Amino acid sequence: MLTLFAKKPLVTLIFFTIILLFAVISLSPSSPFSQIPLYSAIGESDIWSAKRILEWRPCKWWLQGHLTALPVETNGYIRVDCYGGLNQMRRDLCDGIGIARLLNATLVLPKFEVAAYWNESSGFTDVFDVDYFIQQLKGFIKVVKELPAEIASKEPIRVDCSKRKGQFDYIESVLPSLLKHHYISITPAMSQRRDRFPVYAKAALCQGCYSALRLTNSLETKSSELLEAIPKPFLSLHLRFEPDMVAYSQCEYNGLSPASMAAIEAARGGGDRKPFTGDTASIWRNRGKCPLTPKETALILQSLSIPTNTNIYLAAGDGVMELEGLTSVYTNVITKLSVLSGEELKDMHGNTKAALDYYVSINSDAYVATYFGNMDKMVAAMRAYKGLYKTVFLNRKAFAEYTSKGLKGKELMEAMRKAQEDDFVMGKGSALPDCFCDFKL
Image 1 (cartoon, rainbow, N blue to C red):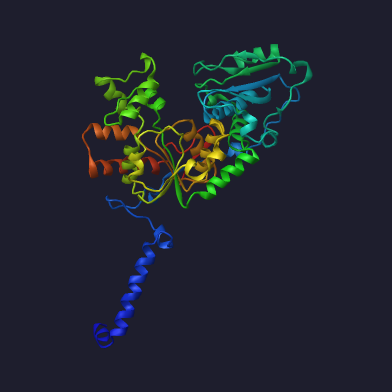
Image 2: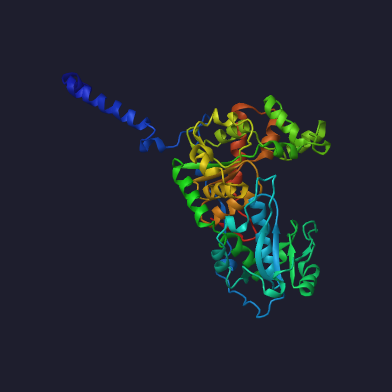
């Protein structure tokens, strides 16, 4: 071969020109070769290449089970009153659907909280397609838009369930009020025992939660436009490091900017949110109670061999602090503000903005969460429902334990890789067990 090149300089020139051209094309951002994963310093393929042992799938008793016929006569009407952010309200509504079926009640369209704190004035009908909701629940539970004339002018009797303990029984404690007043409102108890529900009530809950809640046409159109505008493939990152989140955690952080420290102090307000100190602070952090900073998040993403040129959609509110800790490492971070115009966003409130993040996240190529809150649980379950399993929750407990032992740099990254890979392989946190069953691969 070398003899041939020596005798024919033109052949040599053409050969090396082709190699150079191939190299230039391969490194171009628009080249198909640029989609080949880049590996991090620890020299392993990314987290998604790990072979899972099990995954969560919708239970057969929900999707394929025989429906218990609805009784001819209803025991009355229930309205579910929902409070907090969109996904907390969605969680309460899902529970409320199951409770209404348990009590043989007709469900009235839910009431969503109007709250200045959440920049919120949009209700259920502003976010979700009502007709679709009613249609999808047909056979599982009866839903009405309007009440009968004899009770339409009345406010429902409020039955307080929100702070009841785990052994709280709806049939014993709520059904008597329903039978007496015929129209009640509830906010489901966070500690309720759904596993004690009969299958038909659990099936109604699951159907309502994962099959019946479709965005309104206008909101779905806007969400779809946002999804289309994000460069593909992309990872959706739910990053929680807002002042109120940090204040509520009662965790102390070193090295934050003066502006972040001031915002956290303002969010603490009174003395009940003062940060823990001494041994209590260490114990609290090692239990995984402290939100990850953007800088810590970037380090863990690198430990998972997620390339630093990955397109990342930031599914978060406007108040995330210290964001440069992430964007200085991962340079292709996209936000709602960078894609949608201010004009498109100005009329949107907390619920509708959160709906955009939810829609993008359940349709992303991968989903990573730094927390395990209501949105993360809903997104993970919906992604499992859709058969999308590239979902990871960053392990705050493992990170705190390793850093408290003094691990740094490559050693810390290798330890975190092992902890996160174990979680991913076992499907840890990837779906809610109420409607999903584990399936061994």
